[in-house]
Image (cartoon, rainbow, N blue to C red):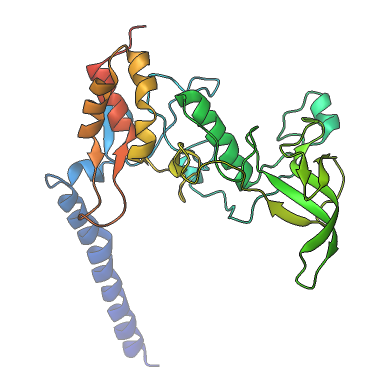
Length: 307
């Protein structure tokens, strides 16, 4: 290649680089920034930050916990839905639990480690999605004074799941049980499983170290209502773990507690709640929701709790 051609080709490349740098590196970002300053867009561009007494307290786009340092719900506040993002609503750890409908059998804790003072998770305990839902439902029911029972859950708040061991038919179903074990109820925590008998065989508690995977895993629905009093968003985390909203059904069961803690009537709380209920997007997308942070901030302004 001649030197003149070499210079001409590289000069053209340099000009293209400069033009694209100006367009994509300067003009486009400045244009987007100017658009973000328009009324109605500026607040969203700045993160939709909400303030109390002039201080930022959070974003209405990201949920947060309303608990004391020990993790106990603050009774004067509406509670958010569970979160699987880090220790809760961590934007840097946004994620789901990655547990699905087939996650119904817990990984038990080592009794020896529990006896030495280790926590359940340190002792190897990993609850299934079913047990997480059951435990949360029981806790919400106790907090709100409603029936926290739900299908496929024991009265103790774990998954009602049996391992049925015995001879099987051609389809793999056990037809003559010889042993039945409540796999999510270890003997270290209970001596009396949630069910006495299954097809005439006495139900046993689970012994640590035993392999019950050879049995047929059978979830037991129980006699609980088809429509639990505790709604689904009270016991399941969102896909991002950052959902700032709850359903009207979850808000409704919290009204009495919040009203009592703030020394006002439930109707006064309902009136505030109604102002923060958002309908479906464009009238048909999604479901009605209530932003928890906005609601709690308004309650603090309107019905503050004396210290």
